[in-house]
Image (cartoon, rainbow, N blue to C red; front, side, top):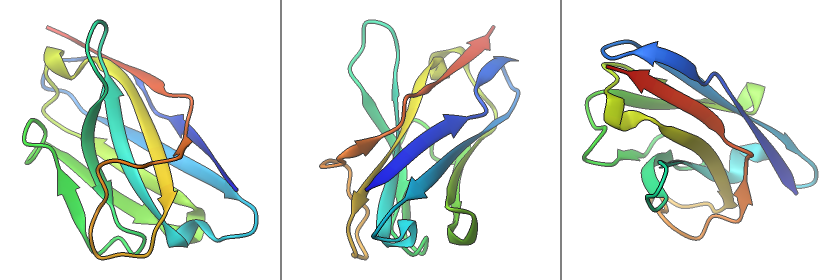
Length: 126
């Protein structure tokens, strides 16, 4: 079992930066064996895959809408995955969630996550 907690959200002006953290508490299977994805959901919109990392952190993918502005990294020693968000735009405003799935693969999954955090609000003002 793994439980996820996001932190780092807040209010920022357009062009600013935020770093979100997703910290896991795991029992049994180590967090380092989980792929982790970041998702977001804006009011009235469907949840959107933002990006994700394989268990090793060697393979990372991003949605087209954030590529070049957002960076995902993980520190398995700290059971934490980060989402560095730069050049933020008002359209990045959403609740951001991290999610995990126990998967050892070189491919980053975009669906099928079965462990979710509670979400953290990111608001970008124009």
